Every structure is written in structure tokens, then in C-alpha cells.
Length: 553
Image (cartoon, rainbow, N blue to C red; front, side):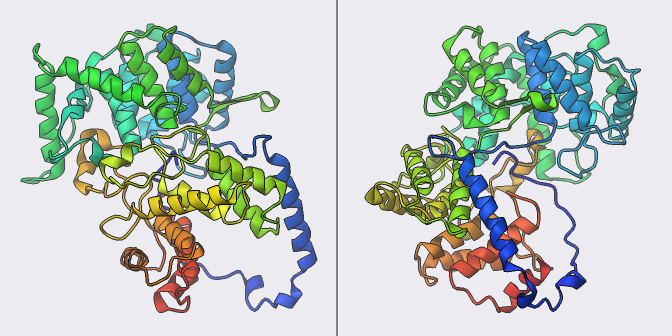
């Protein structure tokens, strides 16, 4: 669940292909379909790991490999063999206009383009080479370094390529704010918390790795290095939340320049402990996702940890676990996270639908593995959801601080198709998981991914929130999956939580009948999952608003 906000795509209504109109089922060659299903089934069974799980590679855009490359230089540990493969990886993804996109088929993105250009320059490319001329042209057309997002500017500042004083202030003292304050850590999404806490440490120390002139990025500033624009723009209105936060940021900048910071030492200690608490043996890195894992390494360096410190060794090892060295294609990729729980659950669901019996050895091994991955500790979610129920699943091998509703629902759907070696344990875990997931229903009736009621829209105007994912709002896709899970596990349609979820779906349906899909390809993902949920609870699929969704899809 590494990319919570995907670009909206066209929701243009389409008509069925002519060859599908009036198709007679008798004309379908079912034997060919059955052969294909059998081949897919056999292939999936062959992919199961000896331990019982399935896991595929999570492909992502070039920015993750670029960040990994930058980290090599920030640590002073450049692996030339990996660097050469990363360069090839980057160049293979350059678009005809010279830039890089952040999703397949998308346009050039300024942050992705600047990162790629910088990586190539660190690797020895000069501005005069054809690929670099095209990349610079694309970057400048998109606004250059001043138009990149805050997280990119943080990394550039660590190389002296962006002024620290113009970055949003993220004082570690935010960890000391009480829960009754208008804003505290619990109001940010789980992944934002995991990124921001180490960034607050980095911002406090403002480290700089100096580069020789030939590696610097002066040519990516439209008006020169000192020409900006650097300041956060204000809106031409008497008052807005954006203007308010810009002024707050200016005040924080003034306070940051004062020599006396009475709570800074304590705040840094709290931030350090916060990171270490969440990177222990029950975790494969901070939040088990690349940006926060990378930032925790950089934060540890700021705090004086050397490369041989046990916490640094573990943090680096965890990050290296995301590497994908592909010698057959001369490629080197970095995954944003690992996905064994999700992949195992969805594979069990698919195999069951394809006719594999629940007590098949592969199904039993998969179910046993999933049961062993049940999270029984109370994680960060208790800040907003103090449910006494423990039980749920995370996306990764080890991420006990951050189980999530979506994975838990998918696991329950997968376990429903399989028979574990201990049926009593399976039933108890499924009961716990369902109760745990249902406890996350938000006040508006929907369900979000990691937390409950993390949806204060005014926080999207915080200066460091330009990654467009500071919140974890309820969404149609996860709400639909919870409906599907509740329906298939026997929760009656009359249940109050199902009725509230139905009201949420009706309220959030788009005018054209579709639903916004937050965790998949928009808007198809939100729409099909909502429809599956409605069908699973026994809702009338001929109801007008449901037919509108069907026709759109």
C-alpha cells in the first residue's frame, strides 16, 4: 500500500465492443477457458514458497531507485556495480520528451525528472550528453527544482542543492503535543507519521554533503540558484488555511533561528525513541516502506550513529531487503515494500475460485502461514481507535505496528477458501480479524486503510503536505471490500455497520456512477470493489444507483 493516492484518469463513459453486444454464451468455447484456468492454477501452485506464502515483485516508478542511489552518496558508500544498473534502469524509463513519469503511460513529472537527472549527474553524466539535454529541457519546462515536492527538496538540501532555510519547518516538538491539541501526530496518516518523524530530526540538524561543481544542479533553476521562487505562495484572500499555515511556518522559521530551544533536546530523544520502538524485531524497517526506512537511516546518521551501530546495521539490512538485482536484464530495481501477506491472501482466493479444494496441501500451507502472521499487538492505530480487540494483518512479512483494514479483509477472504491444519485456531483468528476490521468504521460510515477518522481536510494545506497523502480518509474501495468480507462471513445486511457503509457509498458515488478508487487504478478500482461488496451482502443489483455503476464499468 505504498502509493495511497493515484492520479485520476478519465472517467469517460464507453460503449461495449461490437463483438460483445448480443454475445450468446453458447458461442463461448468453455474448454479453452477451462484449459486457461488450469494453466494459471498450476502456475500459481508452482510459485508457492516452501514456507507456504506467495510473493511477487512490486514494480514502481524510477524515483525509488533514484532515492536509493542518492542514499549511497549521502552515506558515502557507493556500490559502482549497483550504480551502473541503476543508471540503466533510469535511462530505460526516460520518456520521448526527456522526462520521467510516476505511473505507466503518464506525463513527465517534475520531481521524477529532477531526481533522475540528479542521479545521472552523480553517476558521471555531463549536461551536454543527449539524454541530459533532453532531461534538463523537460525539467525546466515543468518548473525546475522550485516546482518539485517537499520530500525531493529535502534530499536536495542534504546535498547543498536547495537552501535549508526555505524548506517547511518540521520541528520534532510536534511529538510533544498533547492529544487535546487541534493538531497532533494522530491526525496524520500512518505513512506520513513514519516519514515525518525522521524528517523532523533531519530538519533539525540540516546536514549537507558537499558536491564538486560538476555534480551540482545550478542549471535546473529557471531564474538561477538565488532566483527562486523559494517562498511558499499565499492565496489572495483575507483568510485561508493555506495562508494560516504559511504564516505558522514563517513563525516556526523565526523560532528555529533562535539559539534557545528549551524543548529541542527532549523532542529529539522522543523522536529517536519513536523510531527505534517501531524498527525492532517485529518490523522489517520503519513502517516497512521505503521512504520512512530511508529517512530513518538518515536520521540515525544525524544522531551520531555510525555504520557499525546495531540499529544502523538493522536499518540498512532492512532497506537492502527491498533490492531486486536482475542480472538477466542488467537491471537493478528497488521495491517500495514487500507484499507476501497480500499476495498469499489473493492467491488463496484465486485458487479457491479456480476449484482448488480447501484441504489441498498448498491451501493448507498458505492458510497456516497467514495465521502465523496475525498481528496481536496494539499498534499506532490505538491513538484513534482504542478497540480492545487485537487481531489483523499487515501487508509485509513483519510490520506489527501497522496492520491495516484492507489486508485484513483480503486475508479473511483468502482464509475463507482454505482449511488450516488447526480449524479452531483459524476460526478464532477470523473472528478476531473481522471484529478488529469492523471497529475501524469512520464517523461517516466508510472505512480507511490504517486508521479511523484521519480525515481533517484542512491539514492538506500544511506546507510539507504536498505529497497529497497526509490523510487516510475512508474510501469506496476499502469500504466495498469490508462489505464483501462482512457479507461472505455471514454478517446480515441489516447490521447497523453495513447500513452505514451503504449510506457512505451512496453519498460518495460520482455523478457518472463510478467511485473514486484510492488504492488502485482510478476509477475502475473503486467501482468494481464497491459492486463486489454490494453483491456479497445481497443488495439488489438492479437498484438504479447500482445499475449506473455497472453501466459505467
